[in-house]
Image 1 (cartoon, protein in one colour):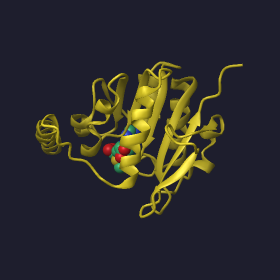
Image 2 (cartoon, helix red, strand yellow):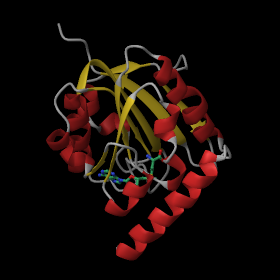
Image 3 (cartoon, rainbow, N blue to C red):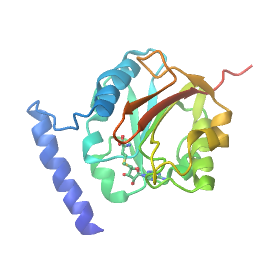
Image 4 (tube, rainbow, N blue to C red):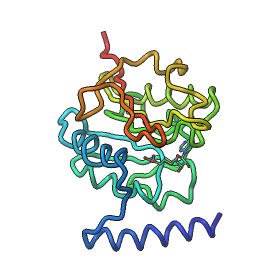
Length: 199
Ligand SMILES: C[S@@+](CC[C@H](N)C(=O)[O-])C[C@H]1O[C@@H](n2cnc3c(N)ncnc32)[C@H](O)[C@@H]1O
């Protein structure tokens, strides 16, 4: 583990140096461009969004907090070594325990991309993670789910997740659709939900 943490820290430092020169190394695929060029900038312009949580960190997401310069962005990742790619603040935690780390109704948006089916796999764990995320969202808050609708990543598809039943479908920020396949090759889908307004 220390070797992996050292490797990630070194990678993050090198990438950070390159980033500062204005040459941000990133994936150029359509699914990433949509997230980075449309979804996150739209959220950054949204005055109703102040506090966001990004779940799951990797070398290619290290700059995501910088795509939301007007917002308070918290990152969460289960792998301590990947804290090197997280933002500030960063929480090392399993998303199933999200409610132990963040206050109820404290978030305006949760971006959970590439976590379902990428470690968050078991139905019970998925239910706790998504129910916890919903509890941490304020009424009207956004839950953006990115997932891959191909085996072995789609063992727990969104329409089987009871925690999502309590949310309303919503438009993906910047797009006039609730769901789309952003990359055919790996069936990377984005789907957006909102916590219902309190009655
Ligand atoms: C494929 S990467 C996706 C990273 C990023 N969110 C993105 O936009 O692509 C999946 C990441 O989710 C993390 N992860 C998996 N299960 C998790 C869980 N239960 N809680 C928090 N992070 C988790 C993994 O450690 C891994 O770094």
